[in-house]
Length: 179
Image (cartoon, rainbow, N blue to C red; front, side, top):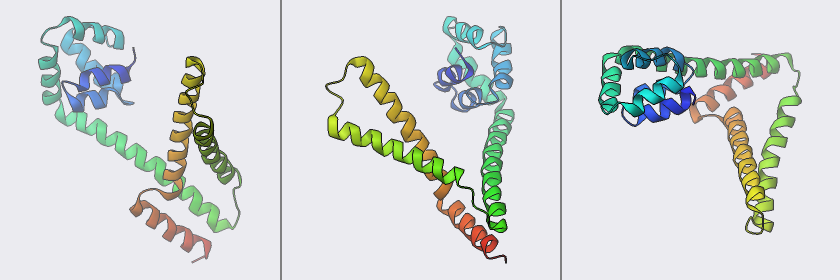
């Protein structure tokens, strides 16, 4: 059992608490939950305490309500980290465009990633999954999911949200033209 699993379990009773618990701040939020249940700050111990306590849902909701501000701060920090990560990637592209150099590794890997997704989907359309053994279909299903996630991330990086994409395009045009 890990923080993500505990987060999913807790989210049924206390959605914000579960979301924060299942994220990178799981250990910090887990300390609040562990303290309320009187157990060690460890996912397995918290899981057992929740399962054994008939009032667990009430306690979890109470923890969420009492620590609402702290939980929001952790969730906001996670959002800021994601935004900063995205901004630094975009800034890297802008700086590269300003120099006039091209990074061929990124578009090559992106092409391979998207191509792999379409190759797997094409294979499934052409040959189907029905004649495969359970093990093979499980593996192909997982590979399809992984390739789909990779293709989604690549698409998100290059095209992003409409607002982010517009800003990125504007920055690249300005950087590429030397303005």
